[in-house]
Image (cartoon, chains in turn green, brown):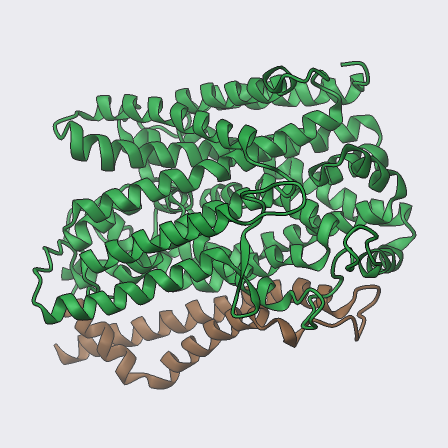
Length: 544
Length: 89
């Protein structure tokens, strides 16, 4: 810890302590006497959030270390392909508007807490619900791991940590951050991240807006940043003999990236609101209209994402930052190094704290969602059907710790040339829920066994394809796209197409063979109901 | 088939133009950035921003406006449907 800047370090620690304090205090926030030992309370904060808090909560879900570390790292390393994330955060809202209000309504009408609850009720199939729950838990682990890698990147640039070759000693700060996260989530449940989201967003808006106006003036203006980036990415790399990257997605034979760009954006956009944590954030909303209104406001948040992605180009245009990142051999350090070089140390401290907290909040929400899945759809369903709410909550609290440990394993073990691949790996898995979940919101035509077979095929294909991607530095798990019919395409999208085709074909076969379809406990009217506006207790579909 | 869903279906059938407008607006918001060849070019530059980057930035407020229009149209659709149901009673 020789080159630690005392001012930066102190500010980060102080802000971190404040946030932790708020997290502990949150246990008592907005609670109208209900016991904390109930899953609706611990896991959904009493389902009482309006449009405004929902906005912060979903924002906290969506803008994470993915945004601040992983996307600029990809932009820094490969150029325009990293902007698929911008395209993704635009098209995610129209896509989500199509199905999310229906999911909110049916979950509210039936009291579902997790996506797997809905699958079970819709198809009358415990097996399918188990598949959905397992997928959610597995897919969240690499996504949480990405948050830990983001925190690690900031701590590395701060100079925290030792140069020991032992992984576990070197990553000590990572384990400390992990521990704090684990403890306050355990105590406060979903209330902690919702309240901290306010602090986080204030910090983030502050440093992003300052950075966007200030840094270009130090680098000769936007014109110079773009020109430098264009020259850099068009230059030929001496090691590969190909261009370093692409400044604009290209359709030419040299590194065609348009198809890759579009498939990554579309796959990520469909995947986002299949994640249990995004659904958790949604279900905490009080009204159906709060969801719809958020789909209108949240694209404004994407402006922020686009500006943050451009930090990648600023890092290219700043010779000192570019040299530092190259020396460390880790593109994830691009934004932290850029801030450290451009800002006075006190402001760097604020920005670093913002990034760290911006990783902690979603990590907490994700681990709570995964824990809810385990408790509701695996523990209670298969092991202890008579578990009382207090026991369920305790199991959830324990499970959230286990999930975080799993994530830690992903963070330590998988290669992080580009940490964005952790999120894309999760996306490959979670996308396999699309036919049963999105399909099920609109039609009961799919056969449950057909869906299960399609899901299995998609999971197996996706996992093997992702495992087989290699590059110069890693032999496995090195990327998220492979070549199909001569085009580079996101594996998640290929896998879900395979999944869907199998589900359709087998549904035709099973329906022709008159295979029993199982009970559907939902009613058509419940998909459009808004119980928030009607008196409670009245069944949703008798409003006329 | 419950009354509520029957009512919704008839609302779509009774107002084909409003329903089609909703579909078109949502599709436009999705395809706008999905169709990469449409905006993958350096020129025309807007200020210092190459077109590709400018387009991505400007499409965010556009998406907000499109989705706002969609929710307004949906409100009209359900509002009219309720009115029709009331009239039939």
